[in-house]
Length: 296
Image 1: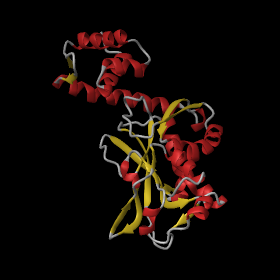
Image 2: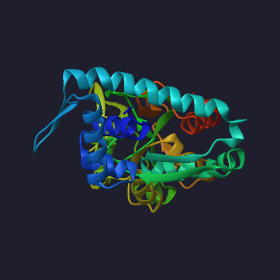
Image 3: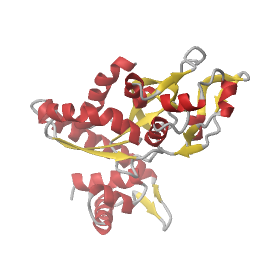
Image 4: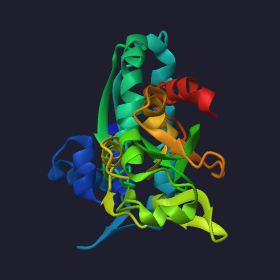
């Protein structure tokens, strides 16, 4: 009896998830059902594809060889199915997107209606994590990452670059004065991030090095820091995409514009390495890249 597509899919998903339980969650099936699919596949092939212990799964030599062939079969099938779609507007399916809350609120949400009008059969699930997540573990199709990338298992598409600004509200500056030099910042209330801490490095020189803020109030979410700044609680450093409207509306004022060294934060769309990217995911990434190209 020949292997089925469902069994190949189960096998590849187990390997990618490093867990039968996680694979079952990704596939929307029971753990026992996925386990049985793997057993059927191994019985048909008369080989052990995965060595199972109570703590981990490990590909056998035969399993590694079969994995490469299985991926190609599944990728070719997905590519063939996409090719049969009459046009982009016919593309359907769910895209799970993950990003830090501020980028979702200030960039993705304002663009969603236009994307849905162009591709009415695609569904979107927006998830918010302010820290880096494992795409496979969280069943994520595409994530937005900030700064330099270090995960070689991911493909990346540069969407835009966003400048950093040091800002405060007019009310705060009126009450506490406008700092004229980095040294003056020690006399002010600073707002920053609990993690990642590198976001507390500001693009202005202090004693020959980049200024590292010691925030009086910290938050893990950039939107929280933004709201604190608007309410006049202190001075902070935030990315353009987050505060551009606030600067234009006068809710925040940029400081040290004559001293700041321009630092542009790279923003990428990342997705798990695979030979054939699902068309719905490719269309979403291309849409974002087109809309944000003005900031490259």
